[in-house]
Length: 164
Figure 1 (cartoon, rainbow, N blue to C red):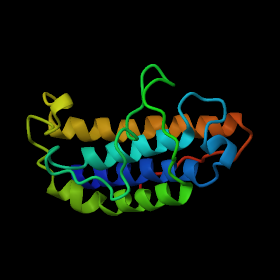
Figure 2 (cartoon, one colour):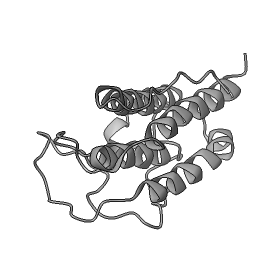
Figure 3 (cartoon, rainbow, N blue to C red):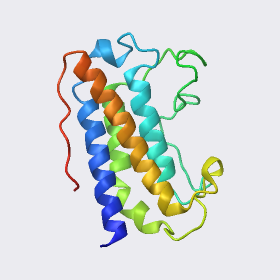
Figure 4 (cartoon, rainbow, N blue to C red):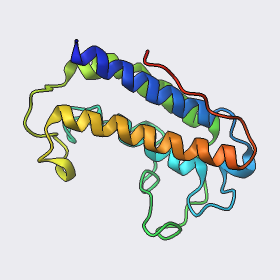
């Protein structure tokens, strides 16, 4: 089994499920829907960290051109933190989604999967390969969270995406 090919397939599948959650989201759910952290912010957080964690190191990360400070963090407890009044649109986040999806192959090929550290200070002691699995789990965690919100709101069901 080729580990890089497996990682690429799992990244593409997890990101495809995130896209399937973003696309049908109605405006009232996008901007809040009664949740302390809006749908768009969870989606942006997921894409931002997927992008960051695909890089060899924190220093090699170049944020998306539309990145805004503090937008990537999910405040704890939910609803705390700085007020954000200018949310990203679905079209903007789908554009960012395409950017992240398009860099999967080159990014995974560039990584030293045998490195004993992740290259990310807050996950420094995690080996690079394990960090990539962590990243995929993070994407899937938030894709599932957002698909659950859609389901509870009576919107489209997000179907499972097989490995690509």
